[in-house]
Length: 436
Image (cartoon, rainbow, N blue to C red):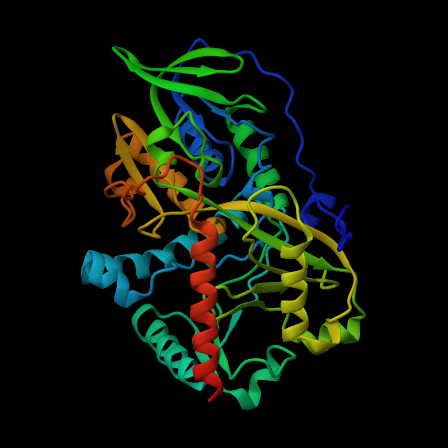
């Protein structure tokens, strides 16, 4: 018996305007300066820099370029770090924590300058982000955080008390929140398509539907076996993130692919959009398994995303969970028709920080933990400069040791349901405390 259809389409809403496409087959070079595994944001950003510096470079993607997370994400330029400042300080020291906070600002500015200077047509709008608080205690913490961002980094950020919350989001669900104006939204599939366009024009070769099957070190560099043949490269950069497979066993033991799902509503009346999303901001909230949501670039629909605990197929239950969450925030949308529901993999790991590292001569740019719109172009670009030995341009707080391996893990995330249940329990406890 088939589960009832919850949404009209199971493909990303973004593909309506920017469908991912295979590229024409390209001859396989016998020798390269650099071989890149993965042609998403990170791989293309690195390839663009390398090609413009005159390196012979090719990117290999197991799917169509951009078919993974690069065209499936929410398009929010948050650059958020899952660990809070106190946790980063405890694990890595205060100097590293402050460097990471400061680099988030630089990475967002880099992205915005890149979109402008390269004339990328990707519907980018710097509209700000509102983050809703679950209870007044969390609101007070957010208010202090907003003050710190403004004082330490000069970011326009401020608290929004419950009394004025509806000026930002048309709901009484939260107990106030905070706004930061350095975050915006873009069309992720258009962004990837435009990035691909300028990378190809720079001289990068991209092989679509050409999985890398092994990477072996030899006396002259690396021997990379692909489904189209074997190529010799002096250097290798791996940017596979949430779609890492057996070709990179060292990385696969460290990254956990976690499904993230997004739903899109049918087109809503202009007065409804004006009431629910009055400032057209990006939206987030303070729950561990919280939702992120936003208006589409044309302002006619609402997209809402969150974690998907399923591990196979395309079951209806995760879509229903998101739909229920949408109705919880906006009761008038409880019965709204959904036009799209889709998922993609984000890469989580034990350190929860984006990372550049080197292992056995291979450089990795990966581990974006759900914030790849900002971090993947930034880290990919820094990794390219690292390969070329450009010390200052390669400098980043995220270039340090590899993430820790996960015990008993070889690519099958058997433990995810328990982790998701643990986060859900934390949310229930936080909600109970906030409601007393």
